[in-house]
Image 1: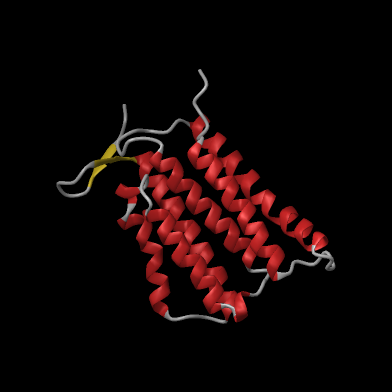
Image 2 (image 1 turned 30 degrees about the vertical axis):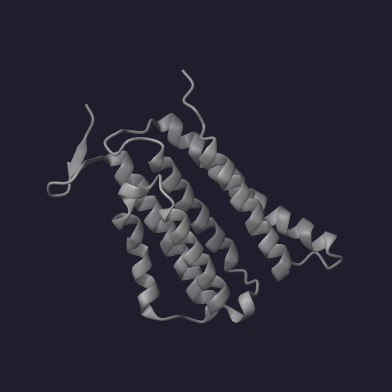
Length: 179
């Protein structure tokens, strides 16, 4: 028996879809908290962006989530000193990856469709691999740039590029359910 929820007269949503939306909101909250610590604080209006995944959960398969994350990433580079690297960028990257992966997972099934535990685990593994790739890519970029192995802004940007490519691959070629 599949449990669904109605919001007024709108579409019905499965608990799996609501869970993916909650995960996306949690990822945004982690990202914004990291941004707040990295930048020394920001205007309270930015915190309203935590609610945007809830408002756009019906558009999970559209370009809306990508546009949303473009806004958040631009916020990182405009609110932190010269877009510099901070150790807060690692939890921010984790929040970004979790939120984006949750949105992609949500887009892979209809609103009233449920996700199996096996599918959720597979997506969790893909998300962990995407996050795990960020740090070594950044260190490698620092080494190739002839700099010490510390994470520098250019290496951080290259690391985010690696994460973006990994997320794009997962989003355009989602793991299929094996029977």
